[in-house]
Length: 275
Image (cartoon, rainbow, N blue to C red; front, side, top):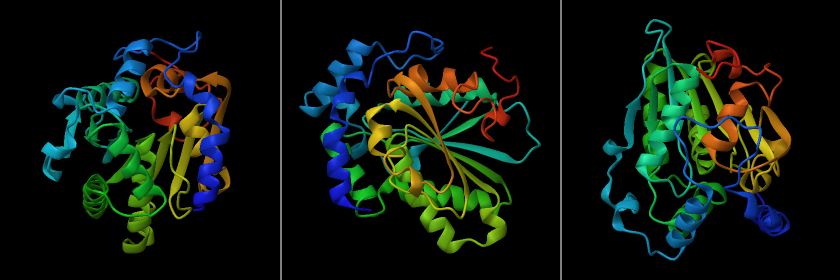
C-alpha cells in the first residue's frame, strides 16, 4: 500500500497516542489484566530506549519451534475447530499468554498462541514496516503460515485471530495461503483482527475486524484502510485504548462492536456472559 498514505495517517492521528493504554469506564475489568496503564506507558518508553532487562527482549533467543504455546481448555473436542492467536507489538511472552487466556475465557476453548516475540519497540516497529509496506515474511509469519496450512490440510477449520501487529502478520499469512490453497481449504479459514495494524486483507477468505475509533493503531491500520480489509470492519464509537484485554475483549463479549451479530461473536457459548 501507499507509504505516503501511511505517513499521513501516522502524523494526522498522533493525538490519539496519549490514549493508547487508557481505560473506558464502562468496560469490564479483565481476568488477566494487560497491566496498569501507567506501568504500560513506562514499559513502552523504556523499551523504545532499549533500557529494559533482557527478559523482555525475547526474539533473538527464540527459534520458530518455540513460538507455539497452548492455553486453556477446549470444551468441545469434536468440532474440529482450531483457534489460533497472534499477539501484537512490544509484548512479552507473559503478556501474550494473558491475552490468550482472556480469549480462552470467553470462547471456552484451547487457544494456540503463535507467539510474536519482542526485541524492543524500535525493532518491532521496523519489523512492522517490513511486514506491512514491503510485504516481506518474518520468522513468526513463516511459522504462522506453516501452522495454519498444516491445520487446513488436516481438514480442520481454523479461526485465526490477530491483535495489533498480529494483524499485519495474519494479513501476510493469508496472502500466501490464498496463493497455495484451493477453494475448499480457504472456506475452512476464518480471519479476525482486533485493533489491527494491517493495511489490507484478502477478500478470498472470510474476515471481520474490530476497532475502537480513537485507538491510534486502528486509526492507521484497519480504520484508515477500511475499504481494503476484505470483510466487515466493526468500529466502536466514542471509545479509547489499544489494550486487547482491557479495551477490547470484555466489550466484544458483550456485543458492543457488532450488536451481537458478528460470526466471531457467535462462537461465544454464553452470549454476553463474562463467567
